[in-house]
Length: 126
Image (tube, rainbow, N blue to C red; front, top):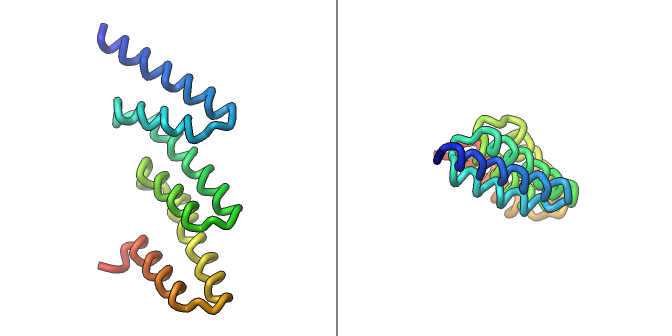
């Protein structure tokens, strides 16, 4: 009986998350899905949806040139699916664009800092 109630609760949460997503309220959908993951940490369906939604947010921020926000969202995607190589590639691409942008402005100190962050992300710094 408990398992049936629990599954019904999760199913309703997915339904609510889907309605929010379809209405363009991706952040509310993410909140609901995070609740599902809190209740059921091994819920692959919720983790995959979260991963996709975070990548959508990351892509939107990338398109806007909001580099740090884009990196943050792709990093959130990696927290849900650590083996997501597309998210890793996106973060590296964003760092490369951002670094080139700051070098073009002549801000070599910021470029150095960003390179260090990129290296740390790629586990090249102990």
